[in-house]
Image 1 (cartoon, helix red, strand yellow):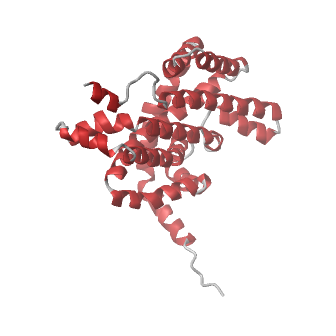
Image 2: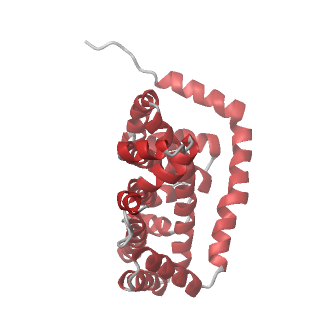
Image 3: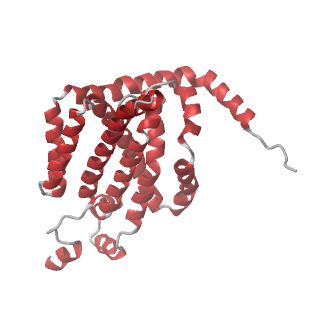
Length: 289
């Protein structure tokens, strides 16, 4: 009844050939990323006294919210993770999430800007982003492991692939929703395309872009346990160890620590994405001018 259309053997042959031809170079690139990016960030954060990171988190929360409730809650939540004996694992997880989020921002915001400007590119990216969002991570972990080996770098790549689509989509959406009248008014003042983007469109699209960064960070945190299966250290490793040894208490503690870290990052990024009260809108500024 069904014809034989299996392409598994072809994919295996091509992947084996790619590993044979490019495996050494990709392993060298993986070691370079590990030595020059991931490990220095992790060592820097682990080298700081815990109270410094608690104060920095509280200051970020205060600057975003201009209140004291959010900073106190963020500092208390992170302090509770340290009290559970998971501070080192927390910093390792945050290092991976931080680097993955930065990579997603560097790739996602320019791609979103181009997708908002060129409709054909948006239509071309749409099925690719759909595949990236819906394809189970274990499917592309197999070729990534064969090409790069076990460790933090394949975990970083898998996390970036998983976190990138919402940032691209929300950046493009925010730029497309900028009021056309404001754009025409800015054009009438002789702004160049670059000035228009940097001074008008990106600031007005900031809530949507920050929502994209928020979603990218949350999706990166969702990959923590999966990343631990391929060599990434941190809280996900404790969750995985709890599952493998049926140590419910250990897995629960690490899982709650991931939840607290996710809530802290979520609340801070959401606060940065909200419009500040008391700031005049562009229309009002124009009328006063």
